Each structure stands twice: as C-alpha cells, then as structure tokens.
Length: 400
Image 1 (cartoon, rainbow, N blue to C red):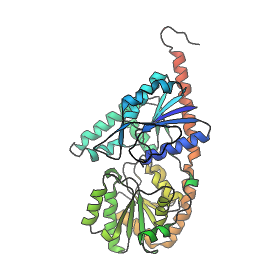
Image 2: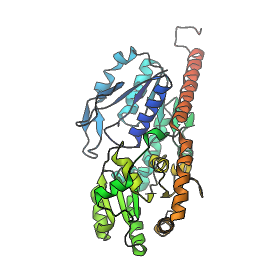
Image 3: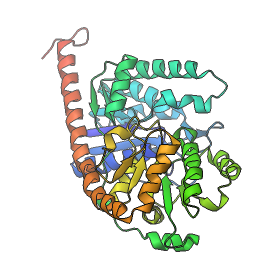
Image 4: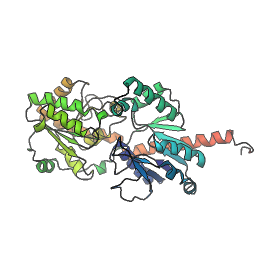
C-alpha cells in the first residue's frame, strides 16, 4: 500500500503522537508499505527525513511548542500528491491536518482514516480556564463527533476511548489499535550513571515521571502525593523529565509544598541515551494522568523493567492489570497512591518481583503486531470504499 499520513505535530516536537507516528511508519515500511508524512516545519531541530514533507507553519502564542501549518501551502501540494497514487489517507490530529486531509482524500478519490490520540473532553478547560468546564466538555464532544463521523475509518488506542466516542454518537467503523513498543529501542540504560550525574545517592529512594509537562497530565497530584510520602520517608526524591506549559506552575507548587529537596525537573532528554538512563534511575515510575488515550510511557517503563505505580483511568486501564504486569494500581486519591508508593519503596522483594514481570508483560504491545493490525484495517477500509464506489458510480458512468 501507498499511505499518506498528515499530522499537526511531529518530531522535534516530543509527545505521544510523534512517537506513535514514527513507530507505525517504521513498522509499516518494514512490512513493505510506503508511508509519506506531511508535518509542520519547526524553527529548530527536525533533521531532514526521507518520506517527510515539511509545511511552512505559524507560531502559536497559546502554545509556543507547537506550530500551525499554513493550509494554503499544504493544499498547493494536491497536484504533486496525486502523482504518488496513494491508496489511503491517515490523519493523525484534528486541526489543520484533519481539514486538509479530508479535503485531499476527496480530491484524490481515496478513503480517509484518523487516529483519535487526545481526550479533548478533559483537555480543553486547562487551556480555556475562563470558559465554563461544562461548556468546554460539550464543545469537545460535539467537535469530536462531527470530525469522527466525517471519516471512513477511525483508529483509537484503547477500549475506554472507543466507549467514550460511542457515547458521543460516533458511528464510523472503529478499530482499537494501540501504539506498540519496540523492545530493541528500549534496551540498556544506566540508572546509576544518571544518578551520579545529578548527584543523587545510589541508595536514595527515587521516583520517576516522564512526559509532557502539561496541566492535563495531573502532575499536581503527584507533587501532593510526594508531600505525603516524604512525611514517612524523608529522603524520597521525584525526578520529572519533560517540558511544557505547566512547568513554571509546577515549580511554584513544589516550592509552596516545601519540596525543593525532594524534586528535580530535568527537561527533555535524548530518547536514545539519557531518557533510558532516567527511567532506570527510578525505583518506581509514577503516573496519574486522567486524560491518556493509552499511556505509552507506562509501557516504556515496564519494558525497561521499572516497576510502576499508577492510577488506571481511561487508556491506562488497558495497559495495567491488577496484581500482575509489574505495576501497582492506586486509587485516584493521594493517600492511597502514597501508600502504594511507600509499600513498593520499602519492600525490595516486591520491587524485584515486579521488575522481573514487567518486560514480559509489556511485550504484549509489540510494535510489529500492532502495525499488522493497522495494515488489516487499511485493507478493510480500502475494500469497503471500492465496493461503495462500484455500487454508486458518479453520474454518467456505469458500474464495472
């Protein structure tokens, strides 16, 4: 197959969408397919990459990490794209990429699918604090339903997200296909070397959180949890890797809670070296987001053999299973979460057991297997589209 992907975000912008796109592109190409990606141009970073077309993009004042592609420049590619003889368009984000992708698919006469990566219902109010939360939820649901019902197929990363979209009134054929993990890219990592670089004692009880530093990630919860843990375990430390719009707020909250000696913000880390070291530096990985459609960082931690303490809300429900798989599941309550963390930090035997279970459990999310499922979904959508076109040919033509 010849596949055209469009996204409003991609590397060097680091997030789960970029990781998902890169993973599926790699695995689909391994299966023998051609995948061409259209994504924004960024002012820095973003090395030239075969099969990626960068579109001139505007600065976004509300979110300076992101860029908005210029729609005209994108649509100017229509004639050039027609020469590629694409079989299907796969849209990855609901902004310029969605509208341009739907329009391009219609012009090219090919079906269009989209991945629903972001749980906007629990996302928008963080960025529109002046708007009533009920209004932002209603708007997000209507917006999502309208866009999803304008597609030939829909990919969602988790059961919970599929269920929520059905409640919205989405009736587009939907397939649950999570982003897979490539174990070969998650090998090694030197936790002790990372600790040494940061001046952290080898035996200091250390928690790690990796992800975009955004309000919807519920990192405030983790700081309040840390405050409770340090009351029983005064030497505890939390390392937070990543950057984002909530960073200043979280640093201020850490100071207010008196966590200066218990909290380290280390920024973005290189995925091939420093990030693996950071994961390995933790006695446990902690996570409490309520908006995840999957939770890739949980799988990354488990693949590296790092025990997890996490809530199981939305997409993380599919990743975590009680009493197995290298994780302890906590309630959405700081007291219960802190108790689970203390249990894990104080019990070396439990940590060793969960660390041993984790990689085998995470292997269920093999990237190659997920790409084959996506390949099958593409084939089903293309076949259905061909049948529909044969049954309803354009005016003036006869079915073959």
